[in-house]
Image (cartoon, rainbow, N blue to C red; front, side, top):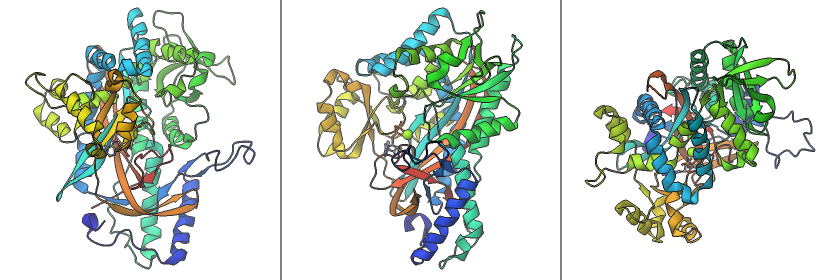
Length: 512
Ligand code: ADP
Ligand code: MG
């Protein structure tokens, strides 16, 4: 902590009175301002809440965590370059196809996604516009006295928490004004440098740009944006904040469970294949879907049956602008991140990153955020080295092994890597990547989770949102913006950081 702030921060709280006071303030502010989630069934059983009316505070830190200003500014400054990079990757079907072939042996889910793309390609895509609501995740890496951001992963589908994150920044600003100055170890109201965070507005602006680019319905229907969501979504208010922001700009928005796409949508019988949404509560009302925003469909659990794959196929072949398309979703494979981060060799020719981002200033700024990531194939020199590191009981302690998955809880850390590899046939090892662990400077904070305070060492992960709308055929970029940030914090005993997965909590940044 002192390494980042130079003094005691967050302040030690005076006995239980101050802790109670802060908790109570946060509990009320959070519900009053929608910094909330639906309770997990293990916490509030269905019998206690049969009507599904309860909401609880999203887990959150009592204080904003200190974060180096130079790191924050760097991460924000390069977001539009990251948007450009991933829009170009998404346009390179041949590149993605090659990587898909490398992982499909051990990964049926990726194979099925790819098949949906191939089916649509065969009949021809009718929509060339593609929308990305991205989030690039980082941790601060400490190398001696030098602090720099290193990328954890790049999300191209269902990048979440933009809604709650903006509220968390507001909560900490509120506490900085009203509560921290009154503590026994006071923090004067103006002393914390809390950056504004427009993540909800920023993401909504991306959706709005795509909505406008779609244009008017040639079938004379009103147009709309549709959020495709998971059944029983508990992180619903995060999504609602985006919906409300869009509705404020008079855009009709509807939520549709991904599992009900086939029931409540049809494709117009025209060469354009407009996606029509039939209001479930008033089926005579028909909207034409301009933008299909997926907050579902990123993992195998969302595809329990062949019908779910048909639903994804319907979205992909329709005129609706997909956020994301299959190709954009696949651009987010960890395999892509690994290939970008693999240094060029004489044998491999120029770097993949340089091919997608020819501007040397931009590509070197992106390159600086990469950490070592290896393939796990049995042929390449990098793959063989990675196999040695991953199976060595000492070396493996510095690594995390990741499959091509999203949503948290899928990775293998340190000593679990060799164990896991033993259970997988060697020819399938290449569907994983091996990544060096980033070790951020130790910090202290207190987390309020389900009414209980947890105090101790924490690790912070920064996410920077980006929105990008581009034409897959011409490469023209129609909208490219940095769109606010997320800070997630977890106990330093936990490897995983997902808030929804129950490991992390919401936080915001105090610049130092
Ligand atoms: P997912 O797609 O499931 O979110 P991530 O790559 O984001 O997968 O990994 C999940 C979590 O694991 C991250 O939020 C972070 O806490 C931790 N993690 C992942 N990669 C690293 C790394 N290289 N160094 C340290 N922690 C990591
Ligand atoms: Mg992640």
